Image 1 (spheres, rainbow, N blue to C red):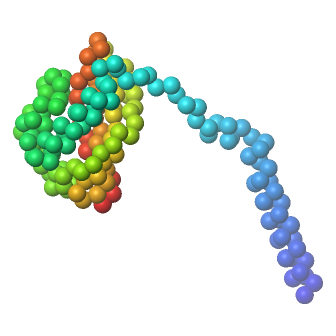
Image 2 (image 1 turned 180 degrees about the vertical axis):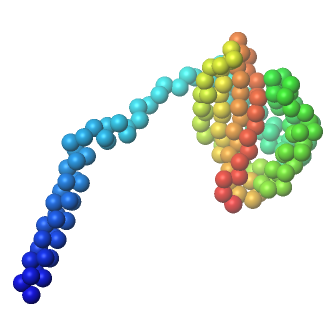
Image 3 (image 1 turned 45 degrees about the vertical axis):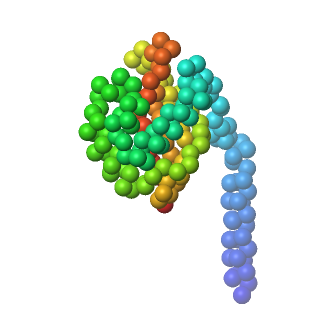
Length: 162
């Protein structure tokens, strides 16, 4: 019986030492300091990308998507995107998407992301949270700004949860 108690006491002491070491080590190392992200200053959206213009653009996307008017939906895109897309491609891909999501219901601005400066242009993504007939998701509008003039170069619609 004494040997059994002695083993239990040794096990408890070992667990106590391990717990103490695990508790103290984070304070002695710089591990936690490197995990903290410092906020990055995002550049402001270009002057021509006002909230009003962005809301009108997303409203047009919603109306054209809900009415399956793919020609008008195609007209949301700027020349840069139109050079790489056709109305047939838009119709083919967005028809599949609409079958999965249903119509777009409500939407609200969420945030924007600065994608960088490349090819003589500044690239931004503007994110909207939205509700579809079949769930919740996001609409991401990608823009390209050259010499202070912005254009839509992409529309990404995701169904995040059913």
